[in-house]
Length: 316
Image 1: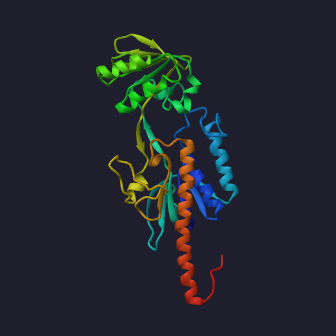
Image 2: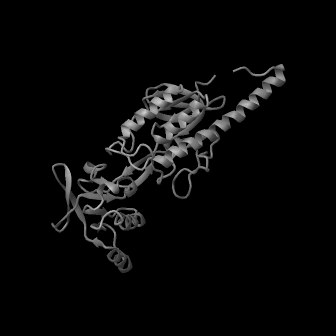
Protein backbone atom coordinates (compact mmCIF):
# COMPACT_ATOMS: atom_id res chain seq x y z
CA UNK A 1 0.00 0.00 0.00
CA UNK A 2 1.29 3.46 -0.89
CA UNK A 3 1.75 6.14 1.77
CA UNK A 4 -0.61 8.67 0.18
CA UNK A 5 -3.13 9.04 -2.57
CA UNK A 6 -1.50 12.35 -3.49
CA UNK A 7 1.71 14.12 -2.56
CA UNK A 8 1.37 17.86 -3.16
CA UNK A 9 4.78 19.45 -3.68
CA UNK A 10 4.63 23.12 -2.77
CA UNK A 11 2.54 24.75 -0.05
CA UNK A 12 1.66 28.09 -1.59
CA UNK A 13 -1.82 29.15 -2.68
CA UNK A 14 -2.10 26.62 -5.50
CA UNK A 15 -0.78 23.72 -3.43
CA UNK A 16 -2.92 24.47 -0.38
CA UNK A 17 -6.04 24.91 -2.49
CA UNK A 18 -5.41 21.55 -4.13
CA UNK A 19 -4.71 19.87 -0.80
CA UNK A 20 -7.88 21.30 0.74
CA UNK A 21 -10.02 19.99 -2.12
CA UNK A 22 -8.40 16.55 -2.01
CA UNK A 23 -8.62 16.27 1.79
CA UNK A 24 -12.30 17.21 1.71
CA UNK A 25 -12.78 14.44 -0.86
CA UNK A 26 -11.40 11.95 1.63
CA UNK A 27 -8.06 11.46 -0.08
CA UNK A 28 -4.89 10.73 1.89
CA UNK A 29 -2.84 13.81 1.07
CA UNK A 30 0.32 15.42 2.36
CA UNK A 31 1.89 18.74 1.43
CA UNK A 32 5.67 18.92 1.23
CA UNK A 33 6.87 22.50 1.53
CA UNK A 34 10.06 24.08 2.87
CA UNK A 35 8.45 27.43 3.65
CA UNK A 36 10.03 29.74 1.06
CA UNK A 37 7.04 31.42 -0.62
CA UNK A 38 7.67 33.75 -3.54
CA UNK A 39 5.66 36.59 -2.00
CA UNK A 40 7.34 36.50 1.42
CA UNK A 41 9.08 39.90 0.93
CA UNK A 42 5.69 41.61 0.59
CA UNK A 43 3.99 42.98 3.70
CA UNK A 44 0.48 42.49 2.33
CA UNK A 45 -1.30 40.72 -0.51
CA UNK A 46 -3.99 42.40 -2.56
CA UNK A 47 -6.67 41.54 -5.06
CA UNK A 48 -7.71 38.27 -3.39
CA UNK A 49 -11.38 38.55 -2.55
CA UNK A 50 -12.00 38.44 1.24
CA UNK A 51 -8.25 38.41 1.97
CA UNK A 52 -7.22 41.82 0.59
CA UNK A 53 -4.55 43.38 2.79
CA UNK A 54 -3.67 40.14 4.56
CA UNK A 55 -0.02 39.35 5.31
CA UNK A 56 1.11 36.48 3.03
CA UNK A 57 2.32 34.44 6.01
CA UNK A 58 -1.09 34.78 7.71
CA UNK A 59 -2.89 33.53 4.63
CA UNK A 60 -0.65 30.46 4.42
CA UNK A 61 -1.11 29.79 8.14
CA UNK A 62 -4.88 29.86 7.81
CA UNK A 63 -4.69 27.68 4.69
CA UNK A 64 -2.62 25.09 6.53
CA UNK A 65 -5.07 25.05 9.41
CA UNK A 66 -7.95 24.45 7.02
CA UNK A 67 -6.17 21.59 5.25
CA UNK A 68 -5.18 20.00 8.56
CA UNK A 69 -8.79 20.27 9.74
CA UNK A 70 -9.77 17.76 7.05
CA UNK A 71 -6.94 15.34 7.76
CA UNK A 72 -4.27 16.67 5.42
CA UNK A 73 -0.71 16.56 6.72
CA UNK A 74 2.45 18.60 6.19
CA UNK A 75 6.16 17.87 5.88
CA UNK A 76 8.36 20.95 6.27
CA UNK A 77 11.10 19.92 3.87
CA UNK A 78 11.72 19.72 0.13
CA UNK A 79 11.29 17.01 -2.49
CA UNK A 80 14.63 16.55 -4.22
CA UNK A 81 13.60 14.01 -6.88
CA UNK A 82 10.54 12.09 -7.96
CA UNK A 83 10.32 8.96 -10.10
CA UNK A 84 7.76 6.35 -11.12
CA UNK A 85 7.25 3.64 -8.51
CA UNK A 86 8.16 0.02 -9.22
CA UNK A 87 4.50 -1.06 -9.01
CA UNK A 88 2.83 2.11 -10.28
CA UNK A 89 2.43 5.52 -8.72
CA UNK A 90 5.45 7.56 -7.72
CA UNK A 91 8.29 7.73 -5.23
CA UNK A 92 9.28 11.15 -3.88
CA UNK A 93 12.71 11.52 -2.28
CA UNK A 94 12.83 14.15 0.46
CA UNK A 95 15.72 16.35 1.48
CA UNK A 96 15.67 14.57 4.85
CA UNK A 97 16.35 11.24 3.16
CA UNK A 98 12.83 9.93 3.67
CA UNK A 99 10.93 8.41 0.76
CA UNK A 100 7.21 8.87 0.15
CA UNK A 101 5.06 6.76 -2.15
CA UNK A 102 1.94 8.15 -3.75
CA UNK A 103 -0.58 7.21 -6.38
CA UNK A 104 -0.28 10.66 -7.95
CA UNK A 105 1.66 13.91 -7.69
CA UNK A 106 0.59 17.53 -7.84
CA UNK A 107 3.48 19.95 -8.29
CA UNK A 108 2.93 23.57 -7.24
CA UNK A 109 6.50 24.74 -6.68
CA UNK A 110 6.11 28.19 -8.23
CA UNK A 111 8.83 30.23 -9.90
CA UNK A 112 11.92 32.31 -9.17
CA UNK A 113 12.09 36.04 -9.88
CA UNK A 114 15.44 36.92 -11.46
CA UNK A 115 15.75 40.63 -10.72
CA UNK A 116 17.61 43.25 -12.76
CA UNK A 117 21.24 43.52 -11.68
CA UNK A 118 20.99 47.10 -10.43
CA UNK A 119 22.30 47.88 -6.94
CA UNK A 120 19.45 48.31 -4.48
CA UNK A 121 16.78 46.43 -6.42
CA UNK A 122 17.09 43.18 -4.47
CA UNK A 123 17.29 45.00 -1.13
CA UNK A 124 14.01 46.86 -1.75
CA UNK A 125 12.22 43.98 -3.50
CA UNK A 126 8.69 43.55 -2.18
CA UNK A 127 8.77 46.95 -0.49
CA UNK A 128 9.34 49.96 -2.72
CA UNK A 129 10.51 47.83 -5.66
CA UNK A 130 7.48 46.08 -7.10
CA UNK A 131 6.43 43.89 -9.97
CA UNK A 132 2.65 43.76 -10.35
CA UNK A 133 0.59 46.97 -10.65
CA UNK A 134 -2.61 45.02 -10.01
CA UNK A 135 -1.15 43.79 -6.72
CA UNK A 136 0.45 47.01 -5.51
CA UNK A 137 -0.44 49.87 -7.86
CA UNK A 138 -3.22 51.19 -5.65
CA UNK A 139 -0.84 51.50 -2.71
CA UNK A 140 1.47 53.86 -4.68
CA UNK A 141 -1.25 55.77 -6.52
CA UNK A 142 -0.52 59.43 -7.23
CA UNK A 143 3.08 59.05 -6.01
CA UNK A 144 6.21 59.64 -8.12
CA UNK A 145 6.73 56.19 -9.64
CA UNK A 146 9.39 54.73 -11.91
CA UNK A 147 9.53 51.73 -14.22
CA UNK A 148 12.87 50.07 -14.92
CA UNK A 149 13.36 48.38 -18.27
CA UNK A 150 14.63 44.81 -18.23
CA UNK A 151 15.37 41.73 -20.29
CA UNK A 152 11.75 41.23 -21.31
CA UNK A 153 11.37 44.18 -23.67
CA UNK A 154 7.63 43.85 -24.49
CA UNK A 155 6.80 43.39 -20.81
CA UNK A 156 8.78 46.49 -19.80
CA UNK A 157 7.16 48.71 -22.41
CA UNK A 158 3.69 47.48 -21.46
CA UNK A 159 4.41 47.94 -17.76
CA UNK A 160 5.50 51.57 -18.24
CA UNK A 161 2.25 52.39 -20.04
CA UNK A 162 0.14 50.43 -17.57
CA UNK A 163 1.57 52.01 -14.40
CA UNK A 164 0.52 55.43 -15.72
CA UNK A 165 -3.03 54.32 -14.88
CA UNK A 166 -2.24 54.70 -11.15
CA UNK A 167 -0.06 57.81 -11.14
CA UNK A 168 0.25 61.00 -13.20
CA UNK A 169 3.98 61.10 -12.38
CA UNK A 170 5.63 58.11 -14.08
CA UNK A 171 9.21 57.95 -15.34
CA UNK A 172 10.33 55.12 -17.59
CA UNK A 173 14.00 54.20 -17.37
CA UNK A 174 14.62 52.09 -20.50
CA UNK A 175 18.08 51.19 -19.12
CA UNK A 176 19.24 48.48 -21.58
CA UNK A 177 16.34 49.05 -23.98
CA UNK A 178 16.76 51.22 -27.07
CA UNK A 179 13.46 52.85 -27.90
CA UNK A 180 12.19 53.40 -31.41
CA UNK A 181 10.87 56.88 -32.21
CA UNK A 182 7.30 55.58 -32.34
CA UNK A 183 7.64 53.96 -28.92
CA UNK A 184 9.04 57.15 -27.42
CA UNK A 185 6.15 59.11 -28.95
CA UNK A 186 3.60 56.75 -27.41
CA UNK A 187 5.08 57.36 -23.96
CA UNK A 188 5.07 61.12 -24.45
CA UNK A 189 1.44 60.99 -25.58
CA UNK A 190 0.58 58.91 -22.53
CA UNK A 191 2.28 61.39 -20.21
CA UNK A 192 5.15 59.07 -19.29
CA UNK A 193 8.52 60.81 -19.01
CA UNK A 194 11.45 58.88 -20.46
CA UNK A 195 14.89 59.13 -18.86
CA UNK A 196 17.37 57.24 -21.00
CA UNK A 197 20.83 55.99 -20.14
CA UNK A 198 22.14 53.31 -17.76
CA UNK A 199 20.79 53.15 -14.22
CA UNK A 200 23.61 52.83 -11.69
CA UNK A 201 21.77 52.22 -8.41
CA UNK A 202 18.79 52.94 -6.21
CA UNK A 203 19.26 55.35 -3.34
CA UNK A 204 17.38 55.17 -0.07
CA UNK A 205 16.47 57.41 2.84
CA UNK A 206 15.56 55.68 6.08
CA UNK A 207 15.26 52.35 4.30
CA UNK A 208 12.80 53.68 1.71
CA UNK A 209 13.42 54.39 -1.95
CA UNK A 210 14.42 58.02 -2.48
CA UNK A 211 15.90 58.26 -5.95
CA UNK A 212 17.16 56.44 -9.02
CA UNK A 213 20.82 57.33 -9.61
CA UNK A 214 21.82 57.40 -13.27
CA UNK A 215 25.17 56.51 -14.75
CA UNK A 216 25.85 60.16 -15.59
CA UNK A 217 25.51 61.08 -11.90
CA UNK A 218 22.06 62.63 -12.10
CA UNK A 219 19.31 61.46 -9.76
CA UNK A 220 15.57 61.16 -10.34
CA UNK A 221 13.49 61.23 -7.16
CA UNK A 222 11.01 58.34 -6.97
CA UNK A 223 8.92 56.75 -4.20
CA UNK A 224 8.38 53.39 -5.88
CA UNK A 225 9.88 51.48 -8.78
CA UNK A 226 8.29 48.74 -10.86
CA UNK A 227 10.54 46.17 -12.49
CA UNK A 228 9.98 43.19 -14.75
CA UNK A 229 11.84 40.16 -13.41
CA UNK A 230 12.84 37.23 -15.57
CA UNK A 231 10.60 34.37 -14.52
CA UNK A 232 12.20 30.95 -14.09
CA UNK A 233 9.84 28.09 -13.20
CA UNK A 234 10.84 25.76 -10.38
CA UNK A 235 10.04 22.80 -12.61
CA UNK A 236 12.99 20.48 -11.98
CA UNK A 237 10.72 17.76 -10.60
CA UNK A 238 8.45 17.96 -13.62
CA UNK A 239 11.20 17.89 -16.21
CA UNK A 240 12.96 15.15 -14.26
CA UNK A 241 9.82 13.04 -14.62
CA UNK A 242 9.85 13.64 -18.37
CA UNK A 243 6.94 16.10 -18.57
CA UNK A 244 6.69 17.72 -21.98
CA UNK A 245 8.08 21.24 -22.31
CA UNK A 246 6.54 23.63 -24.82
CA UNK A 247 8.21 26.10 -27.20
CA UNK A 248 8.08 28.76 -24.47
CA UNK A 249 10.36 26.64 -22.28
CA UNK A 250 7.58 25.99 -19.74
CA UNK A 251 6.07 22.60 -18.93
CA UNK A 252 2.83 22.18 -20.82
CA UNK A 253 -0.44 21.26 -19.10
CA UNK A 254 -4.01 20.88 -20.28
CA UNK A 255 -6.93 22.91 -18.93
CA UNK A 256 -7.07 20.73 -15.81
CA UNK A 257 -3.35 21.03 -15.06
CA UNK A 258 -2.52 17.50 -16.26
CA UNK A 259 1.01 17.14 -17.64
CA UNK A 260 2.05 14.73 -20.39
CA UNK A 261 2.98 12.17 -17.70
CA UNK A 262 -0.09 10.24 -16.45
CA UNK A 263 -0.64 10.84 -12.77
CA UNK A 264 1.28 14.10 -12.62
CA UNK A 265 -0.50 17.45 -12.37
CA UNK A 266 0.92 20.96 -12.00
CA UNK A 267 -0.72 24.22 -10.92
CA UNK A 268 0.17 27.86 -10.32
CA UNK A 269 3.32 29.72 -11.25
CA UNK A 270 5.33 26.58 -11.99
CA UNK A 271 3.42 26.35 -15.28
CA UNK A 272 2.04 29.89 -15.61
CA UNK A 273 4.11 33.03 -15.13
CA UNK A 274 0.94 35.14 -15.15
CA UNK A 275 -0.85 33.27 -12.34
CA UNK A 276 -1.69 35.49 -9.38
CA UNK A 277 -2.98 34.35 -5.99
CA UNK A 278 -6.64 34.04 -6.94
CA UNK A 279 -5.98 32.31 -10.26
CA UNK A 280 -3.38 30.03 -8.66
CA UNK A 281 -5.92 28.99 -6.02
CA UNK A 282 -8.44 28.28 -8.76
CA UNK A 283 -5.89 26.27 -10.73
CA UNK A 284 -5.07 24.25 -7.62
CA UNK A 285 -8.71 23.37 -7.08
CA UNK A 286 -9.24 22.55 -10.77
CA UNK A 287 -6.21 20.24 -10.78
CA UNK A 288 -7.32 18.57 -7.57
CA UNK A 289 -10.77 17.78 -8.97
CA UNK A 290 -9.29 16.35 -12.16
CA UNK A 291 -6.75 14.39 -10.16
CA UNK A 292 -9.47 12.98 -7.91
CA UNK A 293 -11.38 11.83 -11.00
CA UNK A 294 -8.18 10.14 -12.23
CA UNK A 295 -7.94 8.28 -8.91
CA UNK A 296 -11.65 7.49 -9.00
CA UNK A 297 -11.32 5.78 -12.37
CA UNK A 298 -8.53 3.65 -10.93
CA UNK A 299 -10.64 2.90 -7.84
CA UNK A 300 -13.52 1.71 -10.02
CA UNK A 301 -11.26 -0.50 -12.15
CA UNK A 302 -9.82 -2.08 -8.99
CA UNK A 303 -13.28 -2.58 -7.52
CA UNK A 304 -14.55 -4.28 -10.67
CA UNK A 305 -11.54 -6.62 -10.74
CA UNK A 306 -12.11 -7.47 -7.07
CA UNK A 307 -15.83 -8.07 -7.65
CA UNK A 308 -15.20 -10.37 -10.58
CA UNK A 309 -12.69 -12.35 -8.54
CA UNK A 310 -14.67 -12.59 -5.29
CA UNK A 311 -18.26 -11.64 -6.02
CA UNK A 312 -18.12 -9.03 -3.23
CA UNK A 313 -17.86 -5.29 -3.14
CA UNK A 314 -14.71 -3.58 -2.00
CA UNK A 315 -14.97 -2.33 1.57
CA UNK A 316 -13.49 1.05 2.55
